[in-house]
Structures are given as C-alpha cells and as structure tokens.
Amino acid sequence: MLWRRKLCKSVSVNIGSVGPATSSLAVLEQEMYTEAEAARLLTVSQSTLHYWLEGGTRLGKTYPPIIREKSRGGHPAVTWAEFVECGWLKQYRREKRVPMRELRDFITKLREDYGVPYPLVHERPFANQGQLVTVSRAQEEVGLDPEFCLVAEISGQYVLTGPSSSFLAHVTWEGGVAAEWRPHDDNRSRVRIRPDVRFGRPSVGGISTEALWEQVDAGATVAEVAEDFGITVADVRWAVSYENGARAA
Image (cartoon, rainbow, N blue to C red; front, side, top):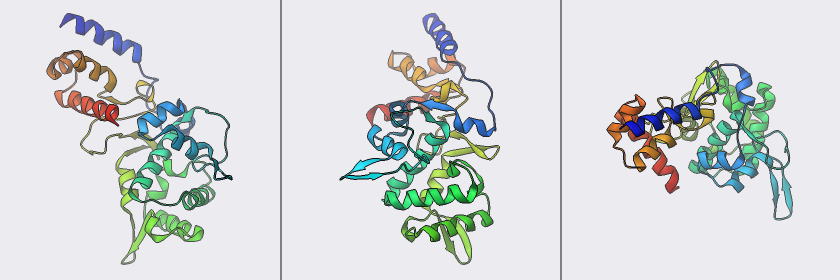
C-alpha cells in the first residue's frame, strides 16, 4: 500500500486546482479546453463541436456559429461558458432533432433579450415564471417549432420541456451562473466538472476521476483506493464508472 500512497500524493500535487470557487462572471470567459478536450468530455465528435462553435460551409453554403457570436478562426480555446452551452446543445439535439438554423436564431434572440453573449449559462432565463415567459416569447418571435421549444404553456403556467429539464439537471448554479456540470446522465453520480477544480477535468471528492481509474486499472481494489485518497468507496465506483463509459464512447 505504501507505493500507492506515494503515488496518490504525487497525483494530488501535480493535478492541483486553480483556486477557490468564484461566482464572478469572469469565470464564464475562462479558457478551459482545446476543442479536442471539450469534445471528449462532452462525448461529441470534434467536427460537430467545431461547427457549433465556429460555423462552417456545407453543400456550398456558409453558416455562422451557433454558440459563439462570430467565428474566432482556427481552433481557439473553449471557454467555460462555451463548454456548458455546448452541453445544452448536445442534450437538446439528442432528445429533439431540432434544425440548427432554428436553434441559432433562438440563441441569438436570447442574447439580445438578456444582453449577454452566452444566455444559457445564466440562471436568470429559468429563474421564475416571468423569465420563462420571456423565453417563451423569444421562441415565438423566431418561429421555433413547438416541438423544439424550451418552455411550454400548460393550463396557464409555463414549464420547462424535457430537454430543458435534462440540461438543468446537469448544472449547479452559483452567483447566478453555471459553476458546475455533471457529465454523467445518472443524477446520482458524484462526478462533477468545475472550472476551479482540477483544471476543469472530471473529479469526485476533489480527486481526478482519471487518477482514481488508473489506480483501479493498475490492480488496486476500490476500497484501497478510497482509503488512500480519503474518499468514499462510492466516490471511487462513480469515478470508475464514468471513466469506463467515457473510454467506451
């Protein structure tokens, strides 16, 4: 067990974190990932992610970005705000095959209404009935098909649709902005991605899931790894489950 304790100490020091959590809006603009890293964490192809971020030419027609206000050229770093909005887009596209043009128009309308470049990483659009009305009006103004709406009116009340609820279930808000993302679909999972922990890589109990997986893969038992890192057996199991799924994707 001594060799594992030495390795655990080394892993803890080398991976590190970028500091205490902050609710500042500056965290949204923090550059976190390369396109390849963001695509891997979101389990989408890099070409798809690049199109969402930068736009592109298809069948001889050039399309503007969906997530960014305008193309930044090449393969620039992906910010935390862009990463979270791409997570929303992935969730939405998986459940509803909404046309990209309609989504692009809708996001552009929300940018105008809220005066922020990345409206879907702010809690405000989902905060209360009044804000849901604003989102609903944006949907109507851009002609978003009812099947693809984020908000629906039922018996005079505005409620979130399935894709919207799925997205929000993955997000933890702090100071009104997205501060944490759960990459696992299972809402019981303890794996989290935070911009201020492990440089935005998946972690559980503050420990990199990759580091925990490597220990188990090397032959240590889940109980031994949990003891060495000072976390629970459940934490280690969730980390291993996440990493196995990511590698199989």
